[in-house]
Amino acid sequence: MSELLRRFKLDTRLTVELLIASLFANILALAMPIFVIQVLNRYIAHGVDITLATLTFGAVIAVVLEFFFRQARLKLATGLSSNVDSEISELAFGSLIYSEKSELEKTASGQRQQCLNSLPSIQAAYNAVNISSVLDIPFALLFLATLFLLSTTLGFVATIFVCIALFVGTATMWSMRNPTKQSLEVSGQIIPISVTASREVDTIKAFNAGSFLIQRWKKHTFKLRELREQVFGRQGLFQSFMQASAGLVSVATIAVGGVLVVKGDLDIGTLIGANILAVRAIQPVFRFTQLVEVFVTAQQAVDKLRRIIILPRDKSEGYAKKNYQGNFEIKDAAFIYAGARTPLFESLSFSVTPGQTVFCIGENGTGKSTLARLMVGLINPARGEVLLDGINLLQIAPEWWRRQIVFLPQEPVLFSATIRENIFINNPNMIDAKTQEIIDRVGLRKFVDGSDSGLDTWISENGRNLSVGIKKRIALARAIATDGSLVILDEPTEGLDNEGISVVGKVTRELYQSGKAVVIFSHDPQAMTGANLLIDLNSKPIPKVSRPKKSKSG
Image (cartoon, rainbow, N blue to C red):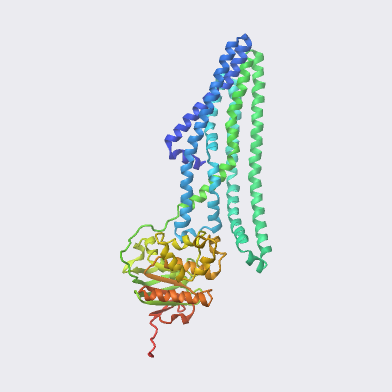
């Protein structure tokens, strides 16, 4: 309920308007029991038709006005939640994109995905109808107060049932918190299994992993079913209790009221009206109990979302240097992964200037991709500095910096968008003629022209359905679209055939010959041909930095 109260506090003016609309709607709802009392006591007793007509007309007007007030309240309640829902949705998705990676990875990917999947359930929980139902609860006191005016005894009878219902409802809500929380956690464990089953069909079949995944699926779904049965069981028990309470309050009101009628302390019309009021008093509580599980689940989801939303964000501001030429330096840098005993590398220092080429070699796991990510600014060194034109990268605006580089990661991931949008992603203002030129440079012409929609061909599943060669060429086109001054290529030829290797080599030479600073990461020692500087990450913990000897032969 804390999230609902927070929404009320965010816009006090709108909350006041909601309460006023609820007040008038519930006051007008008193017209029906008053109408019943007056018809039974005045019209039936005296038979004056004009009295009936007047009472009926007044009751109809009250019902119509109540309808309009309730509709107005629904519109106000929609306004109360729509902005908050949009804000939470944008903050949650933005947190997945802009939160510091080291902090974000402390939450399992399944849990992160579940947070996004829970957004519709949060929006459904705090919709206008549910908010209106909650607002009706305080006005149960209005019906009880009116009942006390008619009969103090019947007022006490109805109050007892309403208090019991509220107490049991609150207890039920608290008892459902833990199983609901556990069910959300188990759901988060199921998501990665379902993603694997839908995306990695070939791997599952090739390695006979089906039974392994089915067993894990059965284990988690069985646990989830147990937890949900526990939640639904408690909710169902309480709803049955409330339905019984609604019947019992009517029975108690009629029984006690009947005794009062016989004693002459109450008339029949007031008894019937009192019964209507007693039922109306307990109805808001009953409607609220039907929403208990919905609110508890939504609150748990909101709590999970807030743990992601409050994560520290990547720096968004900083210095944007004019006329960056490609001078880059790493000074006395070290990097160590959390939990590791020794650094991946330390005391690493090197620099690259425009027109120079640096080759960084190393076996798998020696830190090539880590060093590339450090240069891009995706991670920070544990010690040392990353400098461009003498300015610490920590002082530089990240988005500006990533438009100054040509970056090809080892395992490029594309976006589920068109080929054109993928290439434009880091340079949205690039003209189409430049795009066509890049398509030719990376050898994509045959693929693009052979596609049904050309550059507007849709890439699905982040390019997982494309061959390694095509995916890498699109990623290379995306990289050189920035026309950055510093080139960072991580295993650029890995997985490519001879034609692909030739294309990458040609593009690399063009970048070098255009005066750009080029840094290439590779596990192949033969790739160092023509390097101005060689960094050997196989040397631990301090990488060996050397200048290859030039051949004396012409």
